[in-house]
Image (cartoon, rainbow, N blue to C red; front, top):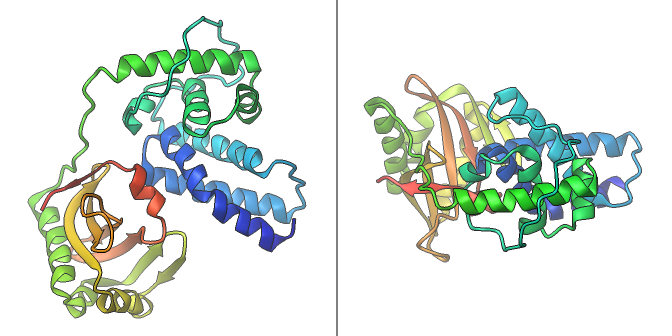
Length: 285
């Protein structure tokens, strides 16, 4: 497989890989960060001549290890050795209960891995064992225990993650959204820091106020979008709705970073619709 074919395969797998990473780390947004790191590792390995017989399983194995690295660095969950052969407990099989990311995050890592791979992505127990680098018996036991735990956890009320913002921070984000709503992009450009960075996720990255100007030009020319102040996984965000799509769910969202009254980072998920599909969000204004 040459480099071009490999990159096309990565693009095709990206939404599926994100579903795994997001549930493993408990966040759709952080899951995209983990996914990007995993894809960089995959591209580097491919460039170094790694031979891959099963690309999807190989990519999931990289995504799995990268997710664990993220969790250990952030100390967000208890680490359970992946090679632990858990005692097999007979439990009836059942469909996965629809649960949020924070509920998934309460499962030990191997149970979380097994449930996501089996009940979300449709892998066999043998494939789970290969990806998680454990025995099939451990994978099967983890799957059974994870399903049982999710059934219990799903009965508990899940916390709604809304941002804890100061009045000043709320006003800055609200003003940004209002300027988008009115189409005053010159005023928005005046809010940018000189060293502002734009991450148009899954498409391009730009730096500097002058280089980012064309980004706003595209929004100024497009009439299909409607903008609202909201939150995504507890983070203040601009929700973007598509008038040609569903009015009930944003098509994508934008996150901002600030230094005083200047915008230092813009992270726009326009070209990564799979992120908002899995994210917890709320309209706040």
